[in-house]
Image (cartoon, rainbow, N blue to C red; front, side, top):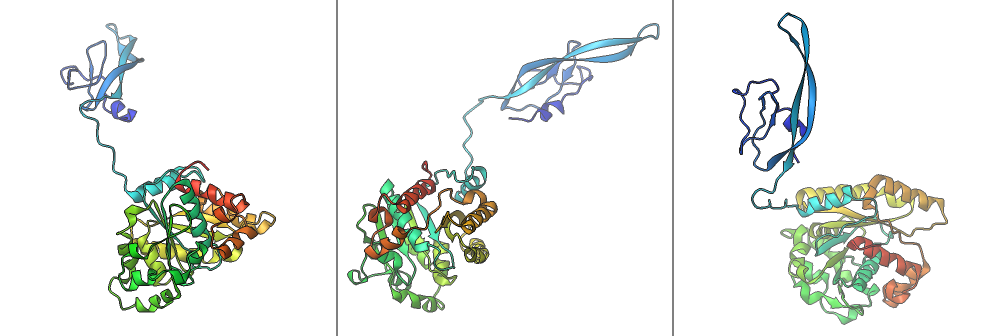
Length: 369
């Protein structure tokens, strides 16, 4: 809609009709009973309708020199958009702009569906905050909903691999071969016991990749190139990054469009967050302009302690809508599940942890939580 000031600023009250522009098919304006014309620039996408009649008083001199108060009326036409010609094409919203709209313009915890596929790096350089646990269990919960999910294990410890029931002795190719030997990622992907859930496994060999990558050409983009060959086969790709800010983590951030940051509800977990955000900004500026921190998950939340509540409030104050409404509680069952090679949604489907990750999956995917 055209602001009212556009019409108001255009009205030339008191100008003779000869100096104005007559109202016809190409001019919209206001006309007084005395034949005056209010001049308004022609807008092909605007038509006018009479909105209201306004009156004003003018003091004039009569024939004998006395003051005469004359009341003039003017019909004010309000601009209304008209459907002239074909409908204009909708504006193109880049993926990054779409993400900013979702984060900034929606209430806290209300996530809008994003276009698929989504590549999310689960990253936090502090260890023990629940990165692998979140990657495995969130992936399993998304697969349970019906999404095709790939968990890419970039941690040399390989905990996401074993947590999904994959034995290191049962596969030949790993993420080390994909990154260092340019093996097709499709050949390294292993199915899990869950429908729709797959994993690209890691071994301890990946620990040497940090040093071996140093002299490599385009070393920061190895994973991105590998993912390009399989990205259309999955709805979600969750990259489990190691607890560091080295080249392996940089590969994960360069390949992703979103960063999911698990934060343990304790003070130490907040200290390294600033450095992680600076690194995300560096990657965004130099390697991947679509990268953005879209999701922050509060993990190991113990409602019995004031500290957990204080940390949660602090994080929500600083990051607002990026913080998921659903928090992951500290439970023994979540800790036990990896020893059986199962996500919590399979190990104990009715536990508090399983319910929390299911609700988190709905929230992250844009469904109703």
